[in-house]
Image 1 (spheres, helix red, strand yellow):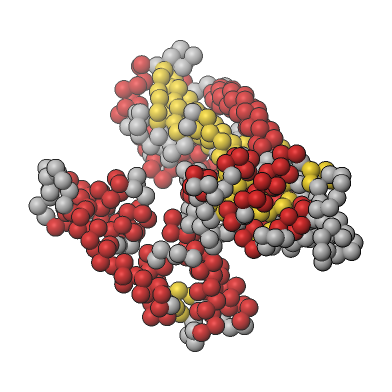
Image 2 (cartoon, rainbow, N blue to C red; image 1 turned 120 degrees about the vertical axis):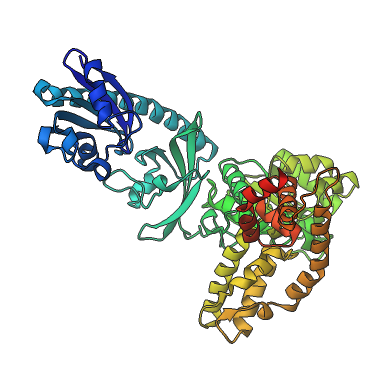
Length: 570
């Protein structure tokens, strides 16, 4: 058609750059003379008024006739153009343009380009419907894994495809069918993004996890975590924590949260492992809060504090008069108190072996016989256990029953120590400082930039519990409003001083790379050391910085000098 009518058919991208031209050979040389060629840009700020640029600027189909063009050399031409929009995002993907000499102008030119643009958009719409179907399938699979966690399915434009009714009830989905404050257009290659939104009855926390196909995002599933709610009166412990109250963005910590979210959607036993002070009970409470047992009791038991002689009666209860000193009316055990809810067996590794035997039978049979009773009581209890020990090592040394270990370790969650999540240290310190300042009634504290590397370099043997205690100590003792290095507790400064020689020694060892040609310049040596450390820690900048005894910003600054380093190597 374009050849027969003496026109050129042109496709441009969203920047107005010509990507493809076809049509009448007789006018192509004329078009080339005015730089109307593949690769040239015809945006208005480059070429003034013209059909391509004006269609992009206005977002509407348009025809520019002869002298209506800004540039004089284009006055011989008449151009008709229509934008092509992405049906999901409504962003302009490009422009279709029909260009020819003005004497060959056809009254149907604008209609032709508009029809072609609409045909392309219709094809894109059909592809979008296939994408949406795939996202919905993914959403349904996620719903089966976490049936008690509100989820939202989004297409790649952020439109809500399906959502839990709670989101509509709390008006978190607007009249445009968009999730409140959702930053789906700001992902910029991130694996996930989180944000908070106010529902009028508390702040909800959201985690958006993109869903990709062949490396291209086609939609997302959003995990919605409601604000803290009043727990059912039968709860034996006050639930203070939920997934929405967790603080951290490090990959290891967010991976643990994902595992816990999946565990919340099941009724299987969970074993939470991690050092003391990492927040194992926080995870246990959050799992209970996101589970179908949220309205049931949450009963926490410190197995390390159970008296050996009274452990059976404490856990499983007793009938009145069943032993000397027993209460006349008897007492229900912790498992009975947790009926319909969750029992949290903290420090399970400290439980005596004879008590482990009875616990195993209770878990296997799903029923308990109180001390002195004749009939078993059927249990409806979800078990979450936690330990700071290496349970498998305890099994190998005969200190923990192997069969009980495998009975508890159906779903396993590892909570990383604070030293393995340096990206979270400043976030956690900020949070606990604000909380501590509010509680002691003093003005807010802020950290001097110089202490950030000190906090990230400290190994935090007491983990988050230690960090929280230090935040409260600073809030109570500091007279000024800025925390400097000298204000940090003695144990931090003393430990960092002790670590300095070791870190310096590691840095020197990195310089002595066996079997490699050492760079002759000092700058080259620095870069060789940094690259070696990054290679050892699989690209983890925080770990490499800690090993070398330098701050992360130093690594980034040195890597910007890499071209200089390459020259010295060659």
